[in-house]
Image (cartoon, rainbow, N blue to C red; front, side):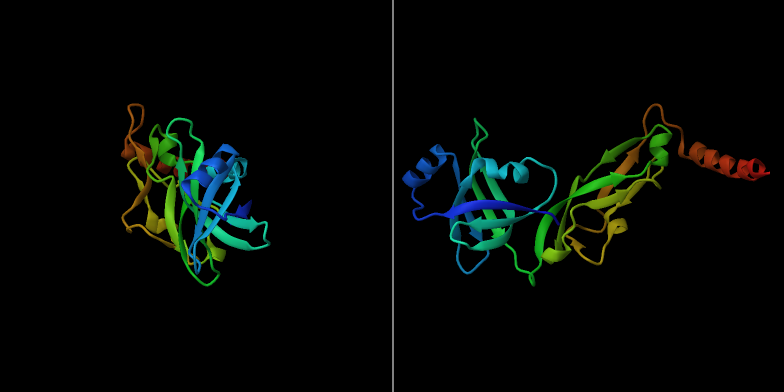
Length: 205
């Protein structure tokens, strides 16, 4: 998985007055959890743009001026209700030998038979929660919709991978193809495919 580096400085004071002064200076108060003790630090608000304002999943390298570096993931973020400025960010430290749970985006690929015949693709899950060792976390999960006919569903069991496990029930529907006013019946769709197969030998002569 791709990683983003956040350069920061360890905080000496965590009081409300000090926090307000940091925000006024364009700094974001942050806390790193998961280690022996929480690490309080600050970073420039602009440093979070590639991490927050993107649908992609990333791990984070927190690089402090003291020389310390921590591998982490974004755990929680708070925004100002009016200005949408970042108020506070929580991170969770990663360890190579400890599994971590993370939301991973789903990328839909292929051309569905059902959509070609007028059906509508409904994406029920644009991200999925997976659990894995940090080295096995994928950048995205690929979902091939090619086999889906009108009325068909793509279940999470189709996407199983030995490198990670899904934290969802096996009957979780990732996407489906719904019937629309312009779609043909499923039986007509099958007949169309069968007709194409029957014509294939003649085309080869």
